[in-house]
Every structure is written in structure tokens, then in C-alpha cells.
Length: 332
Image (cartoon, rainbow, N blue to C red; front, top):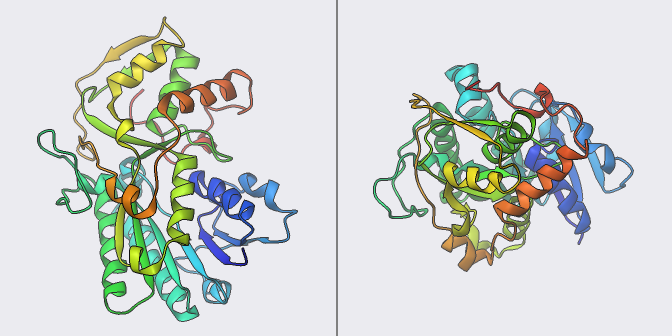
């Protein structure tokens, strides 16, 4: 394969896994990242001639126009992710990073003649779904947080540009991601639960019966490669939910899985109401399955097992460090 792909935010949790997958396919890959959380995740790729790293803040840097020249596709991952991070940063900063920077990325890509832009969005956009019906890409959006509002605004800008003969844009609404990565995060639900179960033998459980959807980080990367390979008439201007119906579950079920590893885990249940993110929904992934041929391969059990192995064998050193989090814990 002889494609040049730009990964904005490629040093992050999803980005570092995606970069490995793209290089394995034979692509030329350029990562653009401001390295807020460091760049150690990219060190294994430095000897690869088809890899390049550019340190830049895409919301302000003029470097972007030059970097985009000759690129085939762009994957835009850089963002303030999650309602705690966005609430802490405030509306002005969230909008600058999640919306205005997305516009800047699109404009640079369009000016350079990029063929396709893949945007990482979130199933948080759906908010709270009533009843037992699973949400689809056509379901109404009821954002419960500043984070979701910013993702919806970025999506609408991109899809509006594409509808007016702009470059081909595809938006992926990701379920809650879990699993190991070169830049593993322990502020994501499954990963956080595993760390707390192992280190404290105690979990604080709130919204225990709220419905959630999950997807392994390696499955996310594979979905993104499928989107870049798909014919334009199948994906142009489309939204795809990325995950698996088999991974639609609740926090209570996650606790049951963890009890298989540590029967002595103590669970403290709290009645907590967050103003920022009270979503409860299960998601349909039929569209990604039928159009992209995407089927998630990795289960919650496999993700939990690999996280346990990494933590128990000190593969991840000092996992309580802030370097493995995009935001502080919201409950202690």
C-alpha cells in the first residue's frame, strides 16, 4: 500500500494503536500531536522510514497546511475527551479544542486535496434513551454534557461541508473504549474498574443499572482502517456507530466479570447524580456491520484479562500516575 495518512492526535490512547495498524499495512504515516501527555507511545515507530512525527497544536499551528500536502486521508482524534475534562476546561477552551480545531483540520485537508477525513466522535451524543430500543445513527440526539455538545457541533460542521461538495468526511460514534494501548488510559470505565479492583479490592458503583456500550481499542483502530479502505459512495457523509451489541451491558455486569478474578472485591454503591453525563443507552451497530463489514472481535473478558496481566506483571509502571489519565477521578 502506498498511501500517506495523517493521524491528528496519534500519540494518544486510540491514535498510537491506529498508527501501528496503518504502518503494518504499509502506509506512510504522519502523526500531528501537541504531546500534552507525552510521546513515549510513538518511540517504537521512530526507526520506521514510513513514519514521521510533527509536534503542533492544530488549533493554532500554521504547520498543518504544509503537513497535509500529498496526504490521502486524515484521521482526526485530537480532542478534550469526556465530560469531566471538558467541564474542567470550560466551554471556551472545549469549543476551541473540539470544534474550532476540527474546522481548522478540515480546511487544511480540503486545501491540500485530501481524499477523506475520518472523525472520531462519541456515542455520548445520543444522551439518554427511553425504553429498551437500541439507538441507531438515525436516532435523535439528546446531549447530556458539554463534551457531547462539542462533538455534535463538530460533526455537523464536517457533514455540512461534505454535503456541499467538500472532501469526503466520515464520522464514527465510538462506544466507551477499553483495553491496552501504548498510551493506556485508566480514566475509562473498564480500565479504571480493573485497576481499582486489583489495587484496592474496592469499587465505588454509581449509575449501576445504566446501560452502556463498549468497544476494544484495537477494534476501533480496525474500524478506522476499514473506513479508509471503503468505496467513497458507501461512506461519504456517513455516520457509523462503532462497537458491538454483545458489549452492550451495565456497570453491574462489569463487577460480575471482575469477581471472577478477585472474589474479595468490596462494592460500595452510591446514589450520585452528575449534571454532566447521565446517559443510559444501548446501541445498534448494524450499519457498520452491513456497510463496512465491521464486527468487533474482542470481548470484555479478553480486555479485562490483558489489563490484569499487564498490571500484575508491572508491564505498566505506576498506573496511578496522572500520565495515564486525561482527567482526575470524579469519585474517590
